[in-house]
Length: 337
Image (cartoon, rainbow, N blue to C red; front, side, top):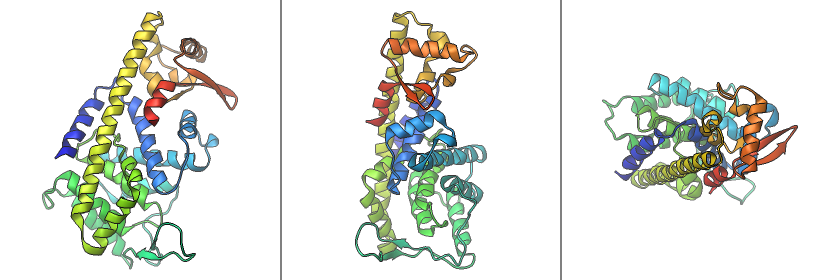
């Protein structure tokens, strides 16, 4: 299966990065941005990475804040699944709560949640799907879904096929009042990690879905209406294949950029070992405090190194709020194309 081969290539290549947070932080944020855009929550790359440079809620607002909460939810789920090596209802609820920043849980039986037709038209949108409801019904269906995901003896199905099937099942159950789409897409990545097909949440799955959004909803609906599983599964396998290939390309380009940067710094007699080159690639916007380490112990030293790279044309300085931050233009170009 092509998707499995490409995932294996991605997993192996990611392990060769000198510092895996170089890619994890940025690709997780790209995934968060695309998954939120599917739900019509938009922001620009510039706004998003500026927000990431602070990582403090006081500086965040609007879509950027929601997208960073999605990334937090992804990490919340990753830490739970990596630790327990199983998918639990508590993990799913905690992911949802992090996405929505709520204390809510499984929707109550009396909640009249329906799926409306997307797009413009009548003021009263047509109901296209009514999720299951009733006392204990959602809980029972979620228990069945978790058994399907966790019990490979009872359900000996290829993990990629199981992921595709489970994603439909989760969206059909629609266990929460809102945020089911974003939560469900996070669960796809977490399941691949649970089954050791990935070590880190670096598959940019939502990008493919965003670019093929109408087909995504059409094929989901095809299962509900006529049990057309094959088109849906092929769609999801293609999503995995294309996004794995995309991510492999990003990693290779970032690795090449790091090596070019190291060579350039050596040629210009900069203290490469002290400057800890991978730190300059963890995110496009760099604050001096991001560089602090055993070898760089003061903000003034960090500023000096950043200014040296700025003088060589490797970084650009911008004032944000009351302080200056430095912008890695070449890294941003790779991440956003």
